[in-house]
Amino acid sequence: MTMAVAGNPVAKTKQFFAEHWERGAPGRPTPQWVLRFAYGMWLVAFAFKLLGSSWDVSWHFKFIRDDLAPPHLINTVGTGIVIVLVAIHSYTGLGCDRRSLRLMQSGLGLFLLAAPLDVINHRINGLDLTAWSPTHLLLYLGTGVMLAGVITGWLKLAEPGRFRTLVLTGLWVFFLENTFFPNGQQEYGIIGLRAWERGAPEAEPSLLNFAAAQIGHPVDRTAVLHFTMPIADWVYPLWGIGVSALVLTLARHTLKHRWAATSVAAAYVAYRMVIWPLLVAGTFPASTIPFYLVFVGLAVDLGHRRGLLTGVLVAVFGYGVLWLQSLSDIAPPFAWWTAPIVLAAVALVYRATTASLNARASSRPT
Image (cartoon, helix red, strand yellow):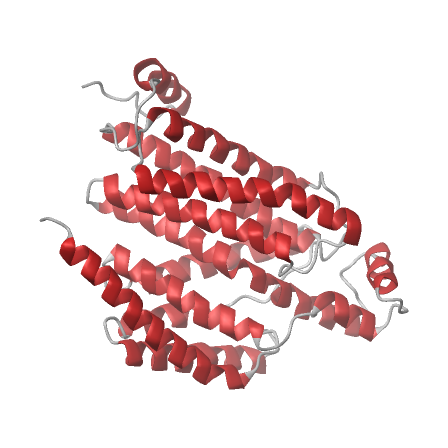
């Protein structure tokens, strides 16, 4: 059994192709150094996609769309790494089983289908907003399916230990970010609207004029509101609190440590706190920061294994902290009437999901 070249990605890549580049079926035994190297590159790929997407939504609240905008290029670097990784997994069968490979391939296929459709959509419509457009949702879906494949493969193949937990935590942070991302429309939008109301719009005049012309309106508050905040108020909490709670529940189940959901949510919010001043320093629009997500994670951890309690805590903590944020005008508008829906949905889905996962775990041979 050969050992990997330490600390040199280029040398490791050369060693991998020299020793392991041969066709094989998914599930082939994979040396641990190859597994760690491959999944380390997955983290790098998703880091590029995270940086690109973070800058991208801010970019499009300032400028009219440009296919070759720098955020798109950064995102493309991550996509390129993903394509190479999926090709290597598919050809060698290393670092994956059949299920995880199919998820990786399907997710990449969805993403590559969505990308040209998104370009066509914006050739027709011009603007790169909203974040909730069908082609954007297809991009998020493709990325989410890819991440599900990577998480599945790492869970199945990585040796237990701290490194396994750290990588898995990082993958769940990326999964949460990808799921939560559409809510950026409202988080950037409310800041953009307030800036226009103060007489200091963040968007370039050309963008404001274009957005107003699309609805046949002068550049006034109605046009700016249509551009910045076109999403109904009930969407933000249902997605940001309800769906995020379900993602954090899955993270808690797979990570299996007491504060797993809180850790994943806190890591994501910490990233948002770091990227915020960088965007501001670069004269790009900033967003509100979803601090309430940390408390949603805390609710999931405190209510672990108790579906109704989890639903109650998620609703109380999530909506309570979101309300506190709104008092300081650092939260998008949201509809209170969604709280009982989130409570019931989280409780029911939590119980069904954990029962299914526990049954699957108990059926595996020990």
